[in-house]
Length: 132
Image (cartoon, rainbow, N blue to C red; front, side):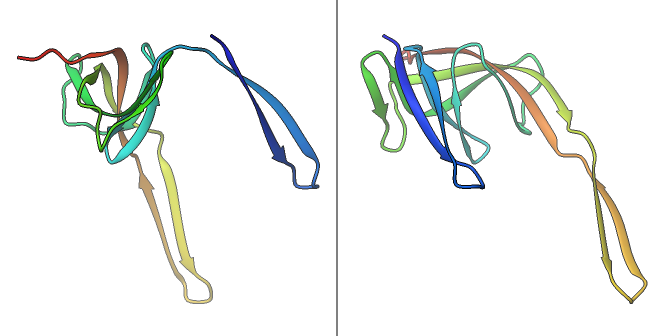
């Protein structure tokens, strides 16, 4: 089953823009990681804030909601019957941001740089939990 959704947006000049978005029936899940929620499908590559895991290791995430052909299932607060597992591809740092602050007429200035650490994760599967 393929669903179509029409998105209406208003431009700066008050003109309406219509855009058709096609949604397939592919299963997706909303997971919670690093204090944020991410909408993921199997095979997605996600850049998250730094996780405390090594490259190549497997990671399981808490599932907040899942959608498939049957409909949307929302957990209270988590869906306990499902698990989303991923593989850590890389731990690294993003591009450097330059932060420059100054106070006018005071000869006070400061230049800083910041590189945010991240973890690159590939979502491998959305599956039912096995009881052990």
